[in-house]
Length: 202
Image (cartoon, rainbow, N blue to C red; front, top):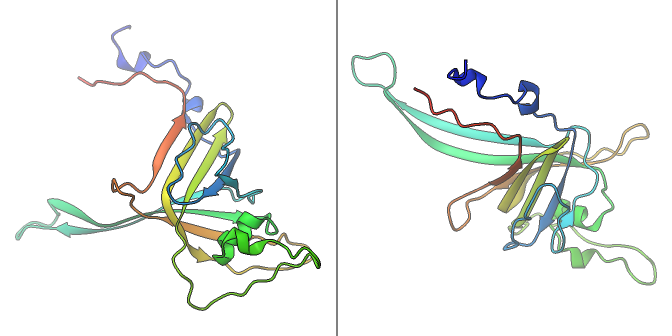
């Protein structure tokens, strides 16, 4: 029946699912514009984060709410969101990459240039780090489909322990917390997904 709204969409259900088969992450200075598409490699000033562990990308939601229940009722008639935080978690495997060390240790990349004579890189960690907000771009790819996440203001808010072991890849597991930009937005989405007709309802 042509009038059946469930017969209008001929896109297969499997085409509307997402498997994070591939992807990547990039970082840039604050104020850097978002890449145009998740299907193309970002260019300068974006710096790649390199290989990411097979745990992939975790897009986190941390929210709290307050419920309001009228006197005499047993269920709320309004809920107010009191906290709404977006996070991104990845494990970076290319720990010798300058951009990755800069992120992990909150040190400008220019301070991590090896000495021209000895080839050594020397830096110190401080117990009182200063804020280190940057722009971030993450992509999750599934075949011809891709999802892009642009974080105009994000900061590493959590770092895991680093293990050096013979039968284990060392990596930097970091969590980036996104902050509101001037427009009040924390994450911008740019997706390439199958087109489906809008369902107007009846």
